[in-house]
Length: 259
Image (cartoon, rainbow, N blue to C red; front, top):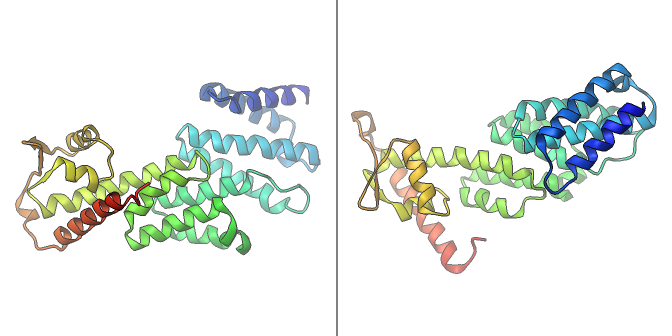
């Protein structure tokens, strides 16, 4: 028990530091999980042991997001559901619970697992759906995605309820950019770099040039030139949609609504 508590204290201290060493945290978590299994903490009915185990798993879930390890995050969430549901009448509420449940919702959105997203929503207390900032954020993001309001998804980066949410928002923005890029390739032969930066939600021309290089686009006279083949010569409504989005984004910038 002393060894578990010592490892637990080391993990909390390292993870809570301003510049936490993720590698050290990962080592502490691995060592702790082995000790918890040896002592049968994962099957314990002792309140103190249950609280310690829940806290370790919660730190593990948040560590996984910071380490950008989605499979690890999902494993921790799966284990935590036992503590959030089965022991809800035994243990005091966790301050991290809705942060982690909200991250789980955002993770499902980022992976386009919409059906599972709605299944998870149904398991959350209805009162929390309407009032909890950690749950409201992914709900609003999903609504924006369904509406095609990508600028609102982008703006949601500035009001995330916890820093870890940015990881999944950035994954979503990557998906959105690739979708816009695909439409742009079919709708245009070229596009000014400045317009592409606005359209793709980039902050600088340098980011646009990097994105263009990754997609095999060429640059000529401050324009992106899209490669064309015969399969691209089809009539699609993308051109009008893209320029409407671009005009809307410019108007938001003009009136100072983009924050």
